[in-house]
Length: 150
Ligand code: FES
Ligand code: FES
Image (cartoon, rainbow, N blue to C red; front, side, top):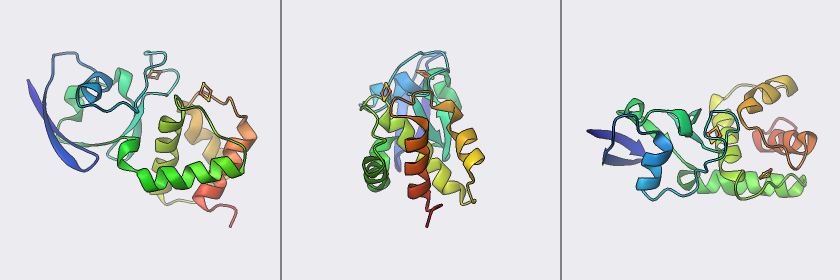
């Protein structure tokens, strides 16, 4: 069957199999930034945005994306660069496997246009499991990116 969705602002029509997951559909469309980790909705490295909300693409049926907007890190180069700068300044850089999903979650937070306090930031990050560079440095970098400390 065919589905249509906006991928990083461009309309895509793609043929999918029943039961196909969005991560696999994105790979068919040459999107390589979306990683496969646990494949069971636990680690968050497969995160993409569906209508600006983070979802685990490893466990999200592609058919459910029909008619929606999907964003990957390829679609937010300027925001990803801003976030990378904040992460670098706070010593919170993650590896290339984890960075894309984390960047998308941070970008989704920014779209919420609410005031994030410490607990709200923690709650929002619950779907991104890896904290190799430490919880505090990541939260500090995020506060900087979100403008909370300014
Ligand atoms: S690959 Fe781990 S949540 Fe999708
Ligand atoms: S495994 Fe990538 S930063 Fe933790």
